[in-house]
Length: 114
Length: 115
Image (tube, each protein chain N blue to C red):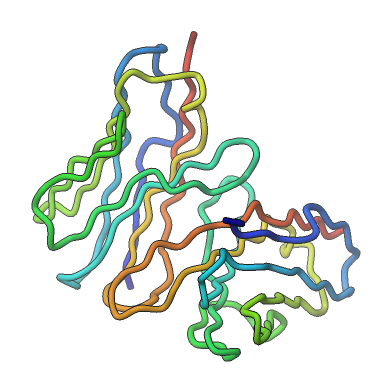
């Protein structure tokens, strides 16, 4: 049973550039959530995708956008990169149910903006 | 908005000893879930234990157990018989119920295990 996978593992970009991060959810999961974890901090929720639509969004600017594909995999796009976007980006997958379902995390993508 | 506070930035424990990590949270909701996640240097966030707020019984998972005090909004993690592999960042997290709501994390506690 494959867990959550993310690519790439590391990425270096310069200010103003655009970046795309990818996530494949755990088998059987239909919901993908993205989190940003700055150095020394806990993860912060960016947004969540279900049925190819953004369902919930945290306090992040429109420079952060995403997409979910029919196979439930997801992309996170960040435009006009800022130095402050340097962080570990975590993807978590879960199964949408009426009741709580545990989110399982991928290994993350470390983004460095120079 | 819900908040999660971990007041211990760093903790250390001798191998085979017991350590308790603290977590408090603030919410006006009555139905929610609490989690402890472990993040080793490999960065993978691993679920350690979870607690449903409606359950009075404290959750346990092998050497890991929680002390859930709903009225005090406290959710501490006890690690018994600490092992070198327990060294990691530990994050307490809150999640509203029902549905697929996002996790709200604390800032974490770095646990060192001394051989």
